[in-house]
Amino acid sequence: MPSLSFDAPPLMPAELADPSGLLRAALAHDQGHPPREILLAWLMSLAPGTDPARAARAMLPDRAYLPGSIGAELAEVARWPAERLAGYARRPRR
Image (tube, rainbow, N blue to C red; front, side, top):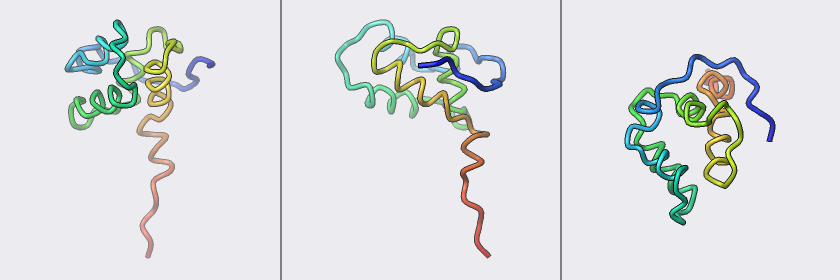
């Protein structure tokens, strides 16, 4: 998978990107939990207003692809920052 190709704001500290430490533990030690469940639990642990894509980029070392399915899931989240999603938001109908 190629490296991420977008102009990103400076990376946030890991303590903000992963407040519960769940993702860091999952990336360090594969405990056999389903990657999607880990990702969902991590997303729910983020503080309100935190851009999940920005947090995911902070957890990807050097914005590189991490081996394993948790890394792949995290890389996919990183591809969809709030600015990009806003372009897909549906405009109100008149």
